[in-house]
Length: 192
Image 1 (tube, helix red, strand yellow):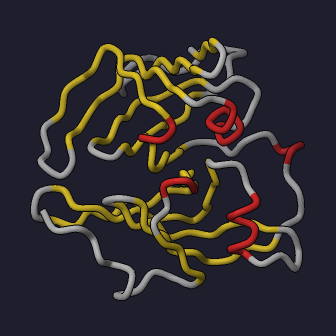
Image 2 (cartoon, helix red, strand yellow; image 1 turned 135 degrees about the vertical axis):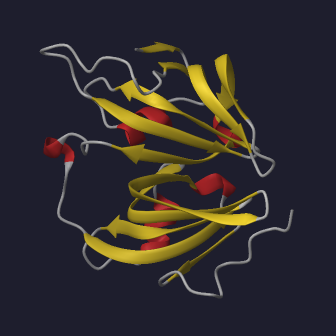
C-alpha cells in the first residue's frame, strides 16, 4: 500500500511468505533501502508510476513493517514503522518487473562505479545518445537508476556483494564516481 502526504511517502512493506497479488492488482516488487547505518527490506505494491519517479517526488519515506538489519554489526528485527529521509537514503535495490514501458526512450548505456558512504555501487547509467554519462548523472533528479548493478558493503568482517537488475542511487550522497567497470581500485570499503 502506498500513501502520500505532501513530501512524505508511506510505503507498507510485506515480508516474504504472504499470499501473492489478487487478480487485477499490480504486482509486488522487492524493495531494499540502504540507509547510512541499516538495510530495510520488504515487498511493496507500486501504483502506476515507476519507483524512481516516486522516490524523486518525495523527501521522506515512512516504511511500515520493514525488516531492518544493522550494518555492519548485523542483527535483524521487523520494525513496525520507521521514518527515512531522502538525505539518509543512499541506495534502493529493486527486484521485479521494470517500470512503465510507455515512459522508456532510446538511450546509450555507460558503466559507472560510485561510492556513497559505506557502499560501492557499479552499474550502467542510461543517457541520451551522445551525452556524457557523468553529465547525465548530474542532470538527473537526485534518485538515479543504474541497471545491471551490484552493491558491495561490509557486514561484520565480510564484504557482501548483492546484485540486482536495478539499483537507484541517491546522487546527492555520492562521494565519488567514475566511468568504467568495477575493479580492485573501486573496493575501498571503510574498515569496521
